[in-house]
Length: 201
Image (cartoon, rainbow, N blue to C red):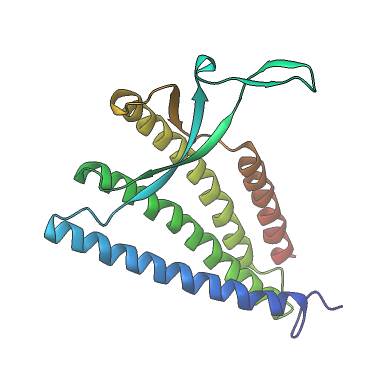
C-alpha cells in the first residue's frame, strides 16, 4: 500500500479534506449573510445557538436507588448537555454568533492547512517548508482556540450565573482547557519543527 504519491493513501484522503473545507466555507458564508441580515433589520430571532453546559443537580431534587444492588442513594456527577438558546437579546445573539464564527473559523483554518499538507504528501514531497509552516499554524490555532474558549467560558459563566433562573440544578458553560487538545497541539508543533528540519536537509 502506497502512503505517499499519486493514487496513495494521502492522495485519496485529500478529497474528503477538500470537501470538508468547501462545506465549512459555505457554512461560514451563510452565517455571515444571516448575521448581516439580522444587523440590517434588527431582527435577531433567527439567531439561536446551543451551548455545551455542565449540569449540577440538587441531590434533594431526585433520588436514585436500587434494592437489587444494595444502593440506597446515588448521585449524578459531571453531567453535561446542550442548552439551546432561542430568540436571545441582540447583544447576547451577537456574542453567540461570534463564538460560532470563532469555532468554525478555527476549523476552516485547520482544514485549509491540512489541504496543503496532503497536496505535498500526495505529490511525494512531504518535507517542504510550506508543510512545516502549515503544521505550525495548525498547532498555534488549536492553542489559541483553547485560550479563547476558556475566556469565553469565563465570560458566559458569569453572565449565566447572574441572569439564568433554574430550579433544582445549576448550569454553567462547559468551556475550558482541553488538556488532550493542548497536548495534541504541542505534538503538532514538534512535528512541524521536524518537517522544517527535513526540508532544510
